[in-house]
Length: 341
Image (cartoon, rainbow, N blue to C red; front, side, top):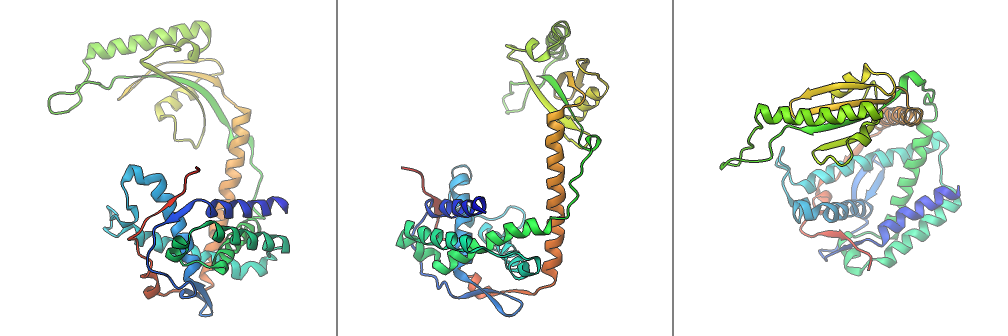
């Protein structure tokens, strides 16, 4: 229980001390932006709060790469303003959050008094930490922050409840992972012509590249260590990785060659369009990687079951968005994450 409360506080504090925004028109937090089952109203304040938090993350992390005003830019595939797409996506999430809250009693999911107190205190800290200008632009009040944190906490608990019956048994065969080391030398040209096109290497230059990798492979066969044999070779990159039957990397050519090897064995040089590979099988069964894959498989099963059950629950409820209120959430102002001073 203590761990869950700490999680709530951590989320709240992350929201509380990082957001800032320029002032805009004041929003009425109590306005209804959506309705669940024609009776449960969703306040504009809590929806706006989550929207601006996500906007702040995007503007901060990707603004320098994609340019400012990301939420005002058009989506290349639809021509829709990204902010409008973000609003629709978040409204789908709020639909689910409210459905899970409505269904929680059916799964004996409820907040403890300790959790409620932690949420209330965290919400107050959040509001105290932010500027009046920010609170004016976002329009969130104490009730909105508290309920948003409540919704997220219930969602966390409902995930556990909805996935409680998932099959956690995974065999070694299903999760089996191999560990290999592979070296690669590129045959893609590095020079360009007057028009900027890459100049292909000649057959002689490609042959020299292959010979360079072959020398490394010959040394590795002597030392039994491909990684060590390639050390210091500037033109050759070396990677050690694990893979299984359902893996898509490394490349198919590398995996196919590796599958024919026993522990410690080497494949002959593999040619691909972009260069040459040398491969060593380190272990045909990596215990640590296999156990890690087992955990991933169980998590995938849980996520799939959770999504399926959530969809079933959503279909049992009605959800309506108030478009006129949604339209009040514009993107003519930016929100960014504060940096530590």
